[in-house]
Amino acid sequence: MAVLVALVVATLVGCGLGWTTHLIRVGLLDARDLVEKTAFGRPRSAMQWPELRLETVVVLPDEDMVLTEAVWPAHPSNASLLLLRVTDAAGKRRLVKWSASHASITTSTATDSWVELRRRRTVDRVRAEVVSEAPR
Image (cartoon, rainbow, N blue to C red; front, side):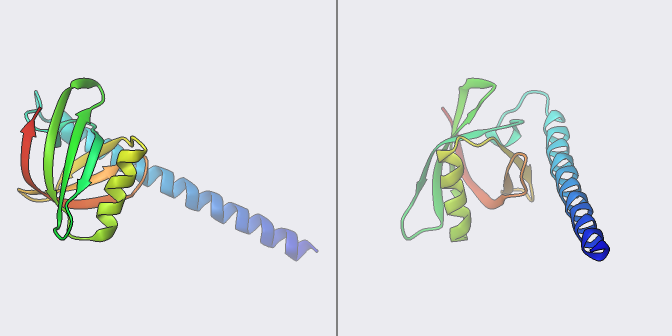
């Protein structure tokens, strides 16, 4: 009986430590992305906004292109149309899901034209190439 109790306690402690580690990791990712965004004085591009929300996502059939309408939640008058190249089907489904749930999204620049879109408070990511951007 004592062995069973010790096993249950060890399992609970392990799960608690694992969950705490996950929360710290997600918090550090959010903080890193916010610090990266505050380096810009006034954002000139949707990719420089501290946070964005995808209002509309249209996956173009038979292509790797996704047309999105992004809005800065803190300044709803700031909107932008983005044409993104997303090469994996899971990434396209994730963008559609984020749009439907009005998820808060942050971006980080991987290279010149490639960005990483990440749903805030999670580690869910989509890697995309920004083909074009048109402020609305």
